[in-house]
Length: 137
Image (cartoon, rainbow, N blue to C red; front, top):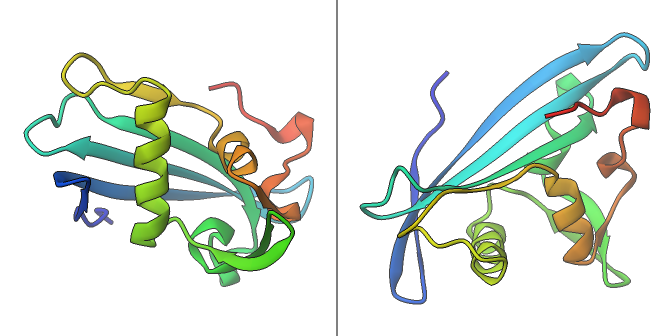
């Protein structure tokens, strides 16, 4: 299934984003590992995206925990996390820019999106994969 391309405006600049999700059954833990990629690009700069990769746990019938209004703690307060929400995408764009993403020059890959969520103050047991299940990409 092709992911839907969506538009968001941040600081008067047009960006487009899409989420790609891939559940993989992990027999050792009787659960699914979700490989989620958020790809964001500025209008007219499709070849220099900000790409953030996430690995998380989630039961397949319940779906991907990172796109299902997961109840989390953020800076000590209960909230919901959903990578599909424009407010979350805005935060990721702002973070990418702070970390040096320059769509005029080159693409930026953040391979451990879960660490980014932790830096943003989010906490949840669904973020943590056992070390032996983490991929090496």
